[in-house]
Length: 453
Image (cartoon, rainbow, N blue to C red; front, top):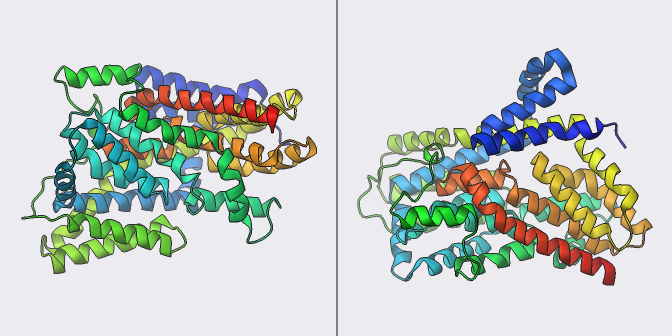
C-alpha cells in the first residue's frame, strides 16, 4: 500500500466542499482546494506545482479527449439549435405531451435509450428536452436531475456502454476474467449494481410527484410557481444564447444528426469522440448542401462559437482532474481503505465497500480512477474472505455511479448542468436529496444481501 498523509489527506476535499457550499461556485472551490493540496505537498512551491500540474494535465490523452468531446458536442448542439432542428424536435414532441409529468417521463425514457456514453446522454437529452419542459414551466433544476439520473447510472447497467467496456477491461487486466471474457463477467455483476438500478427507477416516482420536491428542489419549484425564472441565478455561464435563423426547420434536421452520432459512436467501438466528429461533419454537409439552411461559412462560425461556449464546462472538468492528482498525491484513497480494512468482515464487505468508496468518489471526483485503484484490492479481498464476489464488485461499481451522480464537480454533473442551462451548484444541491435516497437504499440492499448471500 502506498504512503499517505493520514487524516490530513482529507483536507483539500473538505476545503472544496466548504468553499462550494459557501460561494455556490464550482471552479473557484476546486481551485482553492487544489491549491491547498499543492501547498501541503510542495510547501512554498505550491503555486508553481499547480501551474506544472495544469501543464502536464493538458498533455494527458484523457484530458485531451474530454476537451475535444465536450467542445465538439458544443459545436454540434449550437448548429442544431441555430438551424432550428432542436426547435422542430421540441414542437413535434409537444403535440403528444399533455403536461409536465409526461414531459419529464419522456426525458427519462430518452435517457434510457441513449445509453452509450454519459457525455453523449447528458448533452443530447438535456438540449433536446429544454424547450419541451420549459413549455410546461419545469424548473431547470428538475430537468437537470432527470437528465443526470440517466447518465452514469444507466451507463453502468448496460454492458455495451463506455463505462461497462472500461470496467470489463479492468476485470481482464486484474485476472478477474479471462482475456475476451470481461463483458461476460460484467453481465454477472449487473444485477448487483444496486445504486444505479435504484437511481434510475427513482426518477419516474419523482417525475410523477409520488416523491415530492425535497429541500432546494422544493424551493426551485416554488420560484417558478411564483412567476420567477426557469433557471436559477448564476446559470448564464452554462447557457448558449442562440438566435434561430433558418427557415422552416423540420424534425429530420435534429433526428438525422443524432442518429449519425449514436451510430458512429457504436460503430467505432463506443468512442464518443469519433461519434461526435462524424456527426458534426454530417451535420455541416447536410445543413449547408442538402437542406441549404445556412452557408458553409456561417456553419463553421457557429460550430466555432459552440466550441467556445463550452469553455466554462471544460475548465471545471479539467480542474477536477487537478484535484484528483492532489488527492492521489496525498494518498486519500489509500488512507480510507486502510482505515476501513480492520473492521471488514465477509457479511459487511459489500456495504462498507459501497459507503467508503462512495465517500472517496464524491470527495475526489475520480470515478474510473477509483475503479482502477480499488478493484485489484477488493476482488482478492472478497475471495480470501469467501464473500459474494459479484456482490462485492457490484458495490464498488455502485460507489462510482453514486459519486458521478452526486459529486457537484463530477463531469456528468457539470455536463448535465450545461446541457440544461442550469447553474452547476444549484443542480448539485437540488439533486443531492434524491441521490442520497438512492444511496441509502443501495447501502441497505448491500447490508441485507451481504448477510444472506
